[in-house]
Image 1: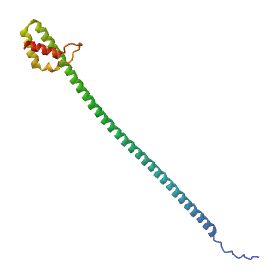
Image 2: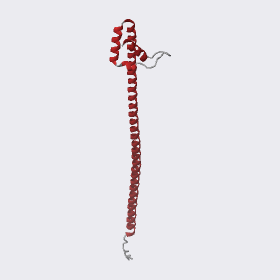
Image 3: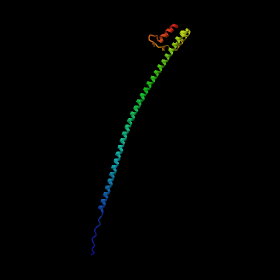
Image 4: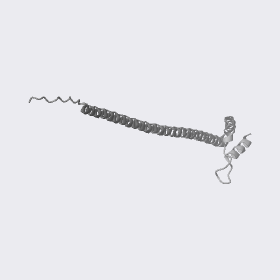
Length: 163
């Protein structure tokens, strides 16, 4: 019995290879989609960081403008205060100078009064020298002593007596 069995035609393993190829194709497609979504996620994170950085820059620019304005305001105030202080110093110096001239005029008056007690020619010379100094106008018009003559009145009496 040697019958040979009829040879079965060889089956092509197309089904398992095709399935294998489809699985590989789907895996590749899945990996591509995963890569695409990861890339989009990274782009969104970068965009979010850029927006946050832009907001920080805007805030810093606003703060910078505010500080610049404040600095200019302080410099202006400082300049005004400096000018006011300079004016105050000039006024104080002027008052001090006037007070010194008044003290000098009173000293001249004291010297003239003392000279009138001892020497008529010396007192005339002192009056003439006093007139040349221009300090006559710095003699006070009011007396410190109640009902007394002011230094300016005293000088006028001495002048009238000597000249």
